[in-house]
Image 1 (tube, each protein chain N blue to C red):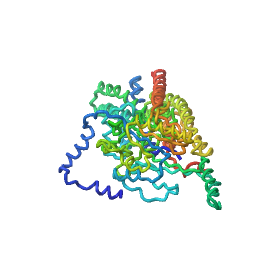
Image 2 (cartoon, rainbow over the protein chains, first blue to last red; image 1 turned 90 degrees about the vertical axis):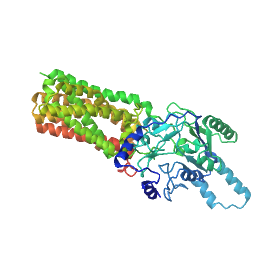
Image 3 (cartoon, helix red, strand yellow; image 1 turned 45 degrees about the vertical axis):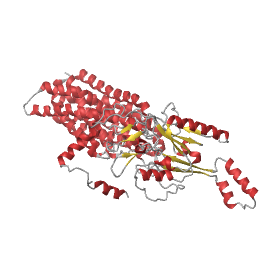
Image 4 (cartoon, each protein chain N blue to C red; image 1 turned 60 degrees about the vertical axis):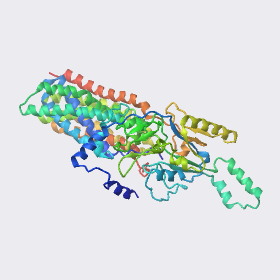
Amino acid sequence: MASREMELSGLHQSNDPPRSRLSEVLRRLIYPFQRGEALKPRPATGFYTDTTVCIGCKACEVACKQWNQLPSDGFNFSGNSYDNTNELSATTWRHVKFIEQFSHESSSNLVSGNLTSLDQLVSLETVSNESPLNRWLMMSDHCKHCVAAPCHQACPTGAIVQNEFQNIYIQADICNGCSCCIAACPFGVITRSDMGGHSHKCTLCYDRQRDGLEPACAKACPTQSIHFGPVDELREQARKRVEQLHQRGVPQAYLYGDVPSETYSEMHSFYLLVDRPSIYGLPDAPFNPWLHMMGDYVRSVAGGLAAIAVLLVVVFLLKP
Amino acid sequence: MPITKVPGWHGIIAWDALLNGMATGLFLAAAVSELAAPGVFMRVAKVAYPVALVLLLVDLGLLVLDLGDPLRFHHMLRVFKPSSPMSLGTWCLTIFSLPLTAAAGLSLLAELGWDFEWARITAVVVGLLPGFGSAAYKGVLLSTNAQPGWKDARWLGGYLTNSALLMGCAELLVLSAVMGQTQAIAILRTAFIVLLVLNVIPLGLLFANLRPAHALLYTREQQWRVGALIAAGALIPLGLMLSKGDLLFILVAVIVLLAESWFVRFVYVKIPHTSPLEVRRGE
């Protein structure tokens, strides 16, 4: 699939005007410096993902790949539950995580147990429900669209922008594959494509949003685990859901990324979780590396100035 | 398993960090020395600028080659973004390359008899600030990110900038020795010895920053081995410089220093790229 796409991208398009080699070089040189008009800001949009209702059907992954024309990653056996895409990548902008939390004792009971009556079945179910280790967590992961996004701060080409919906968007025609965004992202979202050498990630279906449509993944989700809309409304909706879960005996439910912490901004895509973030492969306390930058510059300059001062002192002391 | 993804910067970036330090350090050492004592350093500085330009061009070539799409290298100049160390560094390098080229060109012209001394000195002075910026950004670029180990390296910038000046002084010393500039050799040898000792401070602080990451990645034996190599890289040049100041000793001392400088950069750049198979291989 990937190689086929490379072939297709190399083909001449019938509506391409004929260009000489010189004009093509000039176009490549001038094009990135051309600017369009700044778009009028619109209300911030994002995702709220309720992991408690995710069933791991991967409809979101498929819808994302289909709409964004992303190539297949191959049909691989990962050995990790029902996961066969493993991680977010340049060609997988949605990834459903499967976290199996089963104690060996209870699973052996289930396998070897001689269930002779309905009472016994009910009692086993009760035990499984009560034990936090007998459950299967699923989570549809994607770009967090952070408000103060490290990838956005790191990008030296201006390819990564905050668009009119305040979503973090990579302009693929501008990115030159320097990988600063990959190094900066504390969530491991962005990846460089082997095909073009550029970075790619979830666009929050910018093209669909501009046409007034919801993102493909949210549209396809059959359990409404993925909610899309104005961020303020989503936060309100998510908080109500957390309260509801607390009342229903799930006191460990909480929201991840809906509000800023001391070390990280809020995210326009946030999650409802029922276990520690690290269980879901998220950092427990995300840290924005830019909080250190000024101090690092000071130490860097100090290191250089100290050496120049030494050199100057020696030169002045020893020169004839 | 780490949550972050590796940026794919490895071997080529270790060489880039070395050549960046060698080019900017040589220019800064030559410029500072020449401006402070023109009678002693002018001749060697006129050779140092073209050498620094060659080193910088090789370094820029490596930077371009490391891009996912090298033909888009000029996209770096679309915006000036101080929040991005890479953007700041690119602009510093671009601006620095202009006075450095002028200084190198005018130095070569002076050798051919066309002497524009005021223009050459102007180019040298103009190049000081962007040259310093080009040396200072690299460490901040490699520490301002979310990568395991790198994100804790608060003293990387301090070490790399200090090391750039140390390497620059060492290169200038070699050029002086090759050209037989005895006064310059005497001054630069003393400066080199003091800078070698001074450089141990940011290096020690950097490795203190990296200790938790190294403890996770390597066995105690491997850590000792790396520490011994780095210590030897600092002590051998120091011993050689303290014992004798002739060309052979200077050459060996500088080669050992450059090898140590590359090794420190390589060890650092490798941290987030260390594959799970290599993690604690000895255990």
